[in-house]
Length: 293
Ligand code: PEP
Ligand code: MN
Image (cartoon, rainbow, N blue to C red):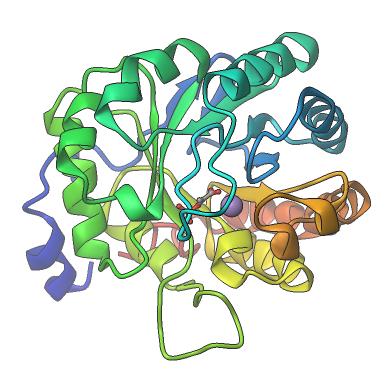
């Protein structure tokens, strides 16, 4: 362990890696996030209609996704953008779960919505704009569902782990960290994927870490190659936006994959996952997935 990191992160005692707690997993039904499997969460940015969501759910399940994402309550930068279908969106998500068996990930923005959304979601997503909404984190501590905690777009890793610690201290140890890109001076991509965040987090924390290449880039063609990078640096999974007709999407169409592109991305990842598996078996002490410390 880099001694500087030890000083920086070990005070978050509930989420920091220790000799007693070096790797935790989050279980959702028969899915284990942070374990041996690479877990892919996929679906549209927003739930727009029953037809849109059910078609997407079937397509991503067939391609190997284990969980379905879709926002019913959308945090939009503009008040004039589509804000989500609210409870009607949650009902559509529930129907998709019944029809496909996929577990559901959806965003919660306000502590007032926590108990309602927890009735429908298998995992509660905290978006980048809410990472430091402490009232929300406190309420999620008692919600009885795992939390997918996205890194704030201007947050340091220390601040991300501070929010994870708040969730754990409030009673919820089931936290998945998500690197989704940060704001930098670069404008060619929507955000800058901080790929080093993955091995740093895997070294200093026992929590699972996933990557969201969709929001990290804002550019559809970059999603598969950064998904590959996520595999190589040791992420536990991905969060990817997929839409039946991205050009008509009500939000984040430019970064959403078509069904075919998603299938191709999943196929493309296979050899990298096999290589990673082989490397872990042969030289576990050298593989930089929290193992080089
Ligand atoms: C989303 O997942 O659709 C989303 C709004 O993500 P973020 O909070 O990372 O912008
Ligand atoms: Mn989105």
